Length: 114
Image (cartoon, rainbow, N blue to C red):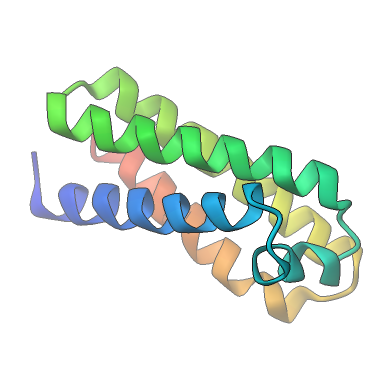
């Protein structure tokens, strides 16, 4: 396993664990970004659960050296970020889509380096 792959896997796992917990808990801080683009709170909390699942998949896949689990985590991250980019552009807030674009690129690199 390359160092780049390890760094990307752990970075995405930690980032999505915190983001998912923040959204799933329904805190104002966690939901503020989704509210800015007109995303419903209930659906945002559901997305937060998927972010937690992706994070767990990446962590467990890394710990057990299970490429399938890591792949599932990367793919979930990829689709969540694709949706985030879509909603940012739909709300005419393309400038705020940069973090999602960076995360989808990192997820793509993670998939490619498995």
